[in-house]
Image 1: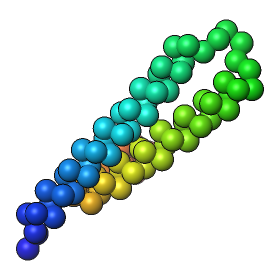
Image 2 (image 1 turned 90 degrees about the vertical axis):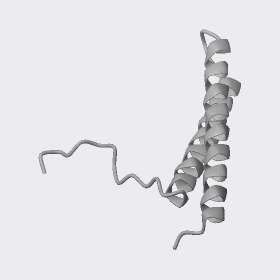
Image 3 (image 1 turned 135 degrees about the horizontal axis):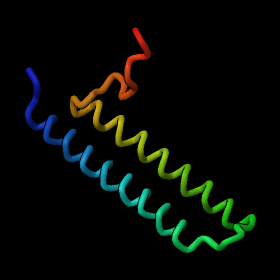
Image 4 (image 1 turned 90 degrees about the horizontal axis):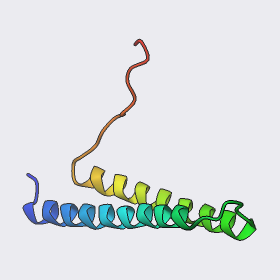
Length: 81
């Protein structure tokens, strides 16, 4: 039997993970809005750091979704199989 308190905790964790991922994606968008026409080494480094953070938080969100029972096998369409 599923513990309703644990399920509630899992959903709360998922909401927090989703909010953190959204914030990271917004940070990438804000960076791209202020990006100069010719990015220099500092901008490339900052972009790489922002993407790394966004990717990690996306993975955290996916892990939290799995824990909350929202496991999805694949979003890719079948390739003729």
